[in-house]
Image 1 (cartoon, rainbow, N blue to C red):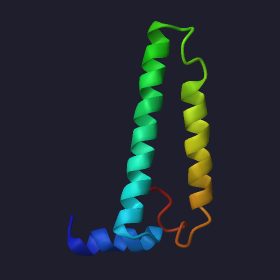
Image 2 (cartoon, rainbow, N blue to C red):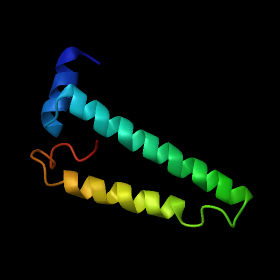
Image 3 (cartoon, helix red, strand yellow):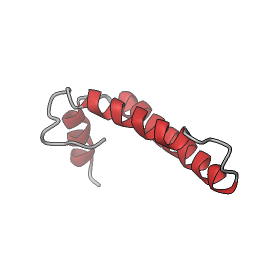
Length: 78
């Protein structure tokens, strides 16, 4: 991926590199944590009964807030 593509992506989402890094890394960590909780729940059904669905709901709410940012129509993903 060339420099122009990287800069364009940051412009499209309206974030600096640091802001984008924080948002993307935060999403990734929360998705991993939710996934691990689901795997534990698969083995021990009495543990983390709602963690996976709660994680998805919170991430979706965060994405919906991002939809209010400029250029969302052209670039609807993180």
